[in-house]
Length: 116
Image (cartoon, rainbow, N blue to C red; front, side, top):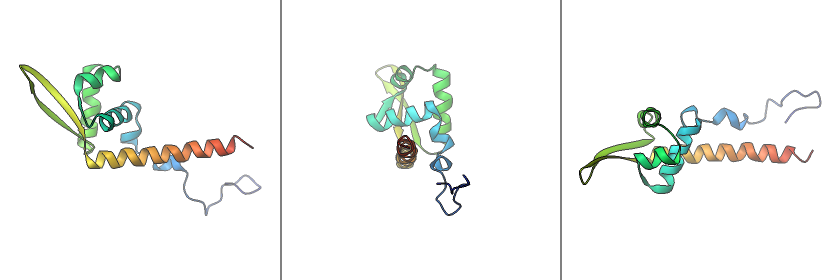
């Protein structure tokens, strides 16, 4: 909130945007985490198709998420074809839930100011 002069109240909690995680919040990475959460274990090709990405672009985003400990990448075979599966880690599940909570806070702020 702001006081009558328009200056933000210093006793108020920080704005929800300050809690957004740059690793998670990026559009493609948020999509990866969301699909992995829904599917529990998702195949690389399915992710690539769902998110309309090139293989190289998806690989780069997966590397960021894997380095952050948010996903596990497992390589193996289905018959004779090499496959890559992505699974959300417990840390990834927590990071996604926290990001969604912050986004809900932002939405609530916008919705409450629409009725001014």
